[in-house]
Length: 288
Image (cartoon, rainbow, N blue to C red; front, top):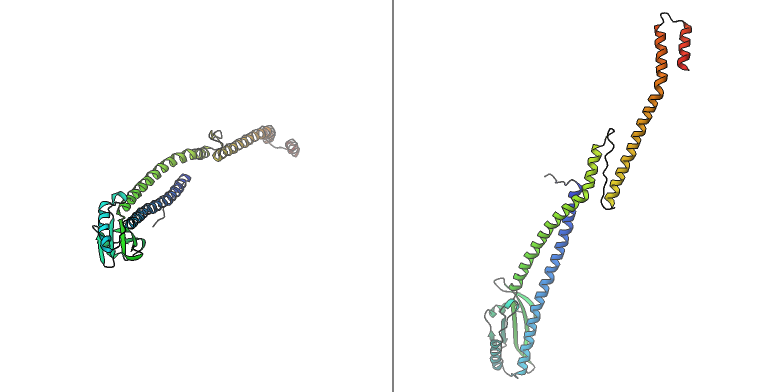
């Protein structure tokens, strides 16, 4: 399998931006999701605890002394107080004594499998539905006579969390798309001088050294790079101009002596039988 390579600074910039923003959003959304889940469960725990405290206070205020009295009081109390929890979720209430159960609201028999008889905990019934359960012992005249369990389904919380997760995921995707689009435009603007630099460098040759980038943007790293490039081309142009001038001057200085030498050699060539003296005179003039 061939490895996909991304060429160009712009592509690497976009990938880096995508990686950093994705990491940031994933960490942020995970944290928000966990905090929201904890806070919502904390609210449920607080409300259940408060209702149990009010129930126990009502028992003490009613001066109940027997299990039968507790049975009648509990039925009246919970029928009068329609207890509903998060998003109007119906509470499950189970009151039992050592002699047996004295009160079960609809679906409260599911709590039979919840064996813990004190504290707050999460319970999962046979159908896989989760409940938050608060269990406490019941006391009459200083003697424990039974237990009460109050529970609330966590399905409403899960529904809210699922909706929140969908919203966070959608917002993350939309934000990433917008960020990539904006990043593409910004990187294109930032890299424009570099692209211009490449075009100018490709177009420059010894016959045409007049092109420059002439960057007019902010005084940043790209500005210094463009200015350094233009200064380099200025030096190259000056060097080529000096080279051409040197060649021109050298050609001019050499033209007259060469012409003289050529003329004397042609004269020597025209002599049918040049003597040694003719050669000596020609060599003397050439070497002079």
